[in-house]
Length: 268
Image 1 (cartoon, rainbow, N blue to C red):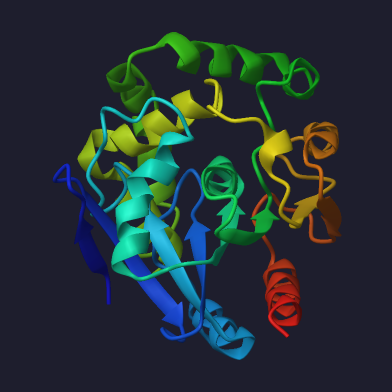
Image 2 (cartoon, rainbow, N blue to C red):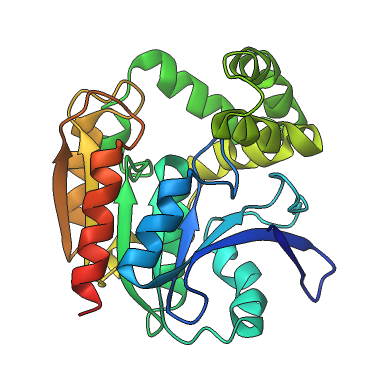
């Protein structure tokens, strides 16, 4: 069941829990299009791994309120802190999927004594690095440059046709459609903010992420260039990159299961 938390500023944050509530907590950050709804096997594997998996809808997604005062990715650690306190979370792990990656890193940077491990699936690279940014095709570089300066409302409008088409791709019972629905809420201000903050100074350096970090990425990822991930890796002091065999940007079931195996091994 989806749960709602209201911060001191009156902003609502929505989340769902999977696995065991009394076990080691791991915060999960969905992708650019997504929600806190996960496929059933995530719950099964979270239970097998012995964790309390907490999937959160970021500001402007689903039932989480937009946050007009969130200007850098690092602000996420401050926004989420009251929720962590309310759940009595002292130490935890952090997962980032695709565009959720900067937010997974932000918790590791913002809570260096609390975040013990980081896991990244098909993650957005460190776009502030010129060599990393240069790995993207010219048309995508132009898009990112536009996002950096454009008003949120204009970016939100730019995503409308894309989300409408994506919505009609999936049937009404699909988890993916739920993710699209969550992304379309609040006039698409969530995805607009995500696009802007990806290319804006994150407010921390990746070199601050000293926790053990494991990444999985497909060499043939058609959304995030593998070379950009390779050039991001040297910025992470304690990171390991694994190759996803399946030719897809989306984390494969095999990759997700590998991540859960590593989490289980970590907790031994």
